[in-house]
Length: 282
Image (tube, rainbow, N blue to C red; front, side, top):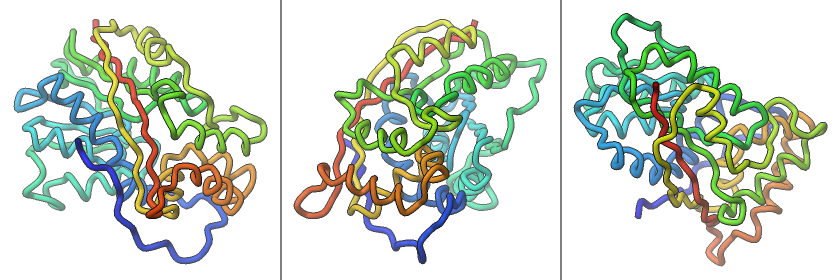
């Protein structure tokens, strides 16, 4: 099994009084993103990602999933429109001038969808950021998929990801802190409980045909309480709560919610199940 326990990182200097997007992006890259490696591995193995794959990664974050696909031989294009700081970190990881031994020729990273061409450029689309926990994320992804459709070969797989059942995701109880502290609840960007058919509804809105699904265990493991708080904050699911209250309040309530998951050695361990849907372009 791929290890996901994150080693301790040096704390950031000084208390934060508001959401710092640069810090959040760095914490995502250094702490949180690797929690999803078992998901990336499972999807790539099932779809036989390799030299013939032309992958479009939507919401590519800081590029770890793209890097894994590129190492398998795929030609990758990443789009990250929500965080220029994550996109900058992805460029550090993947672009030839930054990492010539890790990148493949033709790797592209951009803040918006590439222009459609007469010849569809991609035969695999991934949207690995789990949907169903942020108000409005399903609708936003549906619009993005519809806009990307002209650039994708007909019949190609599109991978959508969401949280599994709350009773099988220990992190769900911790995420409820975001809803409790957000007033009014379910504001734009605020947390909401994941629904059973979130992925199917997105596929339907985007005109995609479901063609299989799977579940993958992605435990969240952290070396200590501080790393756990920073990792979870980096998801962006608590930003609305920080705005509604304060960084100090969110940190305090997160630490309290994480306490039941802390082991005797100080590490934090939360088993989770994530679900992915494979849909086909028509």
